[in-house]
Length: 444
Image (tube, rainbow, N blue to C red; front, top):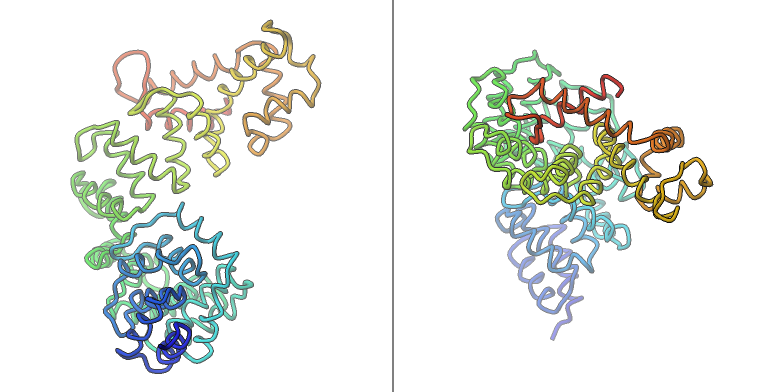
């Protein structure tokens, strides 16, 4: 009986040189003998439509079987979970974990061999490895490999070459050349190429700017299940950009993209549920969608989750969780989350001070600097605040709850100016965000 290694060798040679039905037969034989690379190559065939019909959903399932022990499977699954494809949901959190596996495993040896032999699909994958740093970053090699794959007619590579020309990766930036390659991909019904043509018309790069033309291309891309196109069309229908504002249509497009795990679409759909825009208001659904996007590192969603936990919007009030998400949003570059975090820090400092001083409040300036920093280290704040900001917070905390009171008062005033909620307070996420943005401009 032939070993899995022999079957893998036969399949690999056939796959690179002249793939046929025997290629799949040999891969299945090696797969059934628990050869993880053979399993990964089966997924590769389904991802790119080699011999079998192109089916990213099946590719995802096959890659997942061996992703913990095969670097190639982890590499390609991470790509699918980062960008999404028909039947494959985006999950940036999972993609991040998979990329950790990729760094520890050999994920490129087979691809490099196949790319050297001239296999377009492998050349495309190696191009991405040089671009993203899976292999040592080399934009010139990234461009060269991708151009070879694109010249063989691989639609994914034609789209990527368009991206390289647009951004000047390994070549001179040239939007007109980008359009040429996007069109090549679009002629093969590549959804990402069709979507990218829309972005060129929207931005006026390489072609005259035309929002109308952009929408037409986005609509075509959406028909071919482009996740990005669905989200963008949602924005256009929400804001009435070159098309009537149709709330229900915006929700429909956002929902389609959100079902595929698009973090921006999840956030946008959450806003619709929270505001009752095109759908009945439902704070529980809004919170669930904010949370989905937050887990994918969307900083405004992380801020929104923090607000929901602080005010009890669609979730039980939980100040510890609120602070945790404000911290995540702050580390992710959201300045208004940092602004909201400051008064909560002061409250915690008061509590810590009372514990350290036998439950009696004493000025924090009497504490050694090391001890004050130690208090903040328990709150994971040293990566967010500068030393000057830390000292300023301690000074406010020494004096009183002045900063807390003033910020809450100013925030409430700004909220009342910007919303139509009844009563003295506003607990709606969007209004809190608007109020915080105003405070940021006023340097409160």
